[in-house]
Length: 93
Image 1: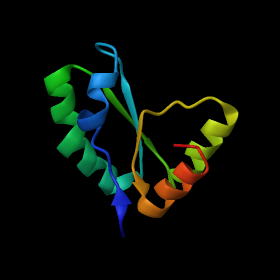
Image 2: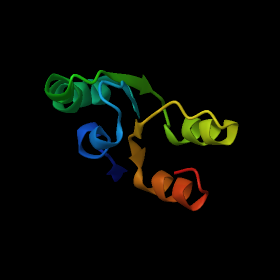
Image 3: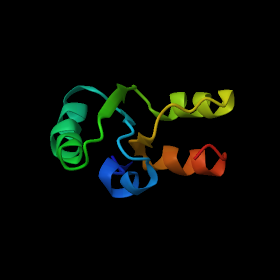
């Protein structure tokens, strides 16, 4: 399964004000736990920025709903490639 994974530290750290929290939407379960260990803990240790994880069976659906409602509450999302392309085409990313 191809996925578009944007590590939080790579793209978001420079765009955030100092010590802002970061919200990441992912798939939950063991996959999310591995992301916390591999990305979030080292990122927080280095920057002091807390990372909150949100789980979704299909992160594309809540992202589109947030954009349509004008209330986007996430900073980073782990999406399948096809969903990322579709959301870009729809103007949601």
